[in-house]
Length: 291
Length: 138
Image (cartoon, rainbow over all chains, first blue to last red; front, top):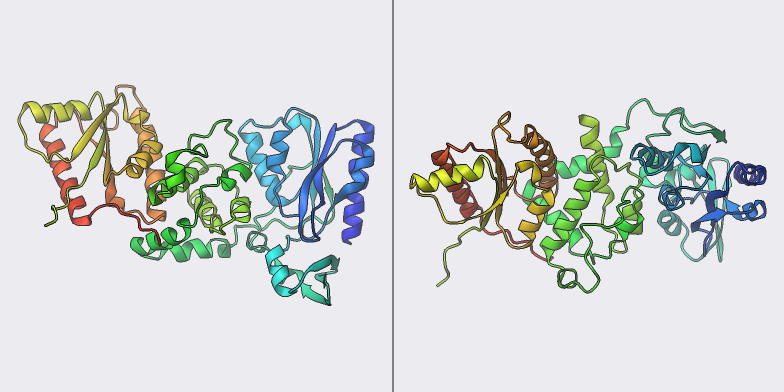
C-alpha cells in the first residue's frame, strides 16, 4: 500500500514537472538511515524517482516551501503541513496561485525514537504491512501496530483543512468533528500545578537550553528576516545563559507565535536538549480554541 | 548583616495620563516608595511585551505598565491594543509559572496623583513580600 502511495506520488510529481504545471516539486528523499527522511526538491521529471513516502516522513515541508516562495511549486502535504501552509497563505507569505498542493492520506507518522525503543539495535529497514510496521534490525525483525508508535501530535491529529488541496492521493482521512481532548492532556496537567511548581518544571527543562535557536530556525511560521529575540553567537547574554534570558526568549517566542502556531511540533523535534517545547504550542492552541 | 530586600520596579508610563499622574503625585507631594524606575512612553500601545521581558531579564522584580483609562487614549485606541496584548502576555507569564503579581497593567489618569501613589505603594509591598525574582539553575 505504501509503495503504491509512493509510486502514485512519484508519478504525479513526474507528470506535473513534465507538463510544466510546476517548476519544482517538494517532497522527501531517503535520509542517512531508514528512520530519517529529508526535504527534497525535484527540479526535473527524472529526479522524482528519488521521492519517498513512508511512515517516518515527519519534517514539516511548509518551512521549506516558504524558502522557495515565488516559484511555481508542487508539494506533497500531510494534514499538519497543510495547516501550516494555510497559515502562511493567510499571512501572505505564499501565493496560492503559484502552489500546486497534493494532499496525502496520512495515517499518522511513527516516532523514530519509539521505533528505536521497540527494536533495539541498528535499524536497517522499515516497511508497512497493512496496519503494522515491520522493522528490520541487524539481528531481528520486529512487527508492531502503527498506532502504538505514533508521534503524540499524530495520535491526536486535528485533520486536514477542508477544501484546501488541489488533489488527493490515498485515502482521505476523516476530519475529527472536534479537537480531541487528549491533545491538551499534558497542558491541562501542567495548568493544575501551583505556579511555583510550574516555575520549577520550566526551570528544570529550560536550564538545559543552550540558546541554539534551532526551534526558531525550524519553525515554519517564524519567517521574519531579522529576529528581535535571537542574539549573536558571541553576545555576552547568549554566552552567559542567565536563566531569565532563556525564559525571556521562550516567553517571547510563545507570544510571537500566539496566533499562528499550528502545532506541528517541529520545535520539540529538533531541540537537541529535548525540551518539551510542544507543550507551549499546545497551550497556545488551547487558548485559541477557547476564544 | 544583610540589607532588607528592596524590589526594583520598572514603570512604563504613558506620556498623556499615567506619567502626568505621576507628575501630579509629585506636585501635590504625595509620598510613594522610591522603588519605581519610570520610563516615559508616548502611549501604552507603544509598549511591546518584549520590553517587559527584557526588564525582567535585566533585573527588575516587577513591571508596571500604566496608560489612560479606556476611552481616554490620546491616540483613541492605543490602550485597547495594550489591554489585548498584555492579557495574552499575562497568560503566558502564568503558564511559565512566573508570579502574576510581578506584572501589572493599570489605568491612571493625569489627575489621579494620589491613586498612582497608592498603586505604586501597593505593588511595592506585594513585591517586598514576594521576594526577588530569582530563577535558579537546576
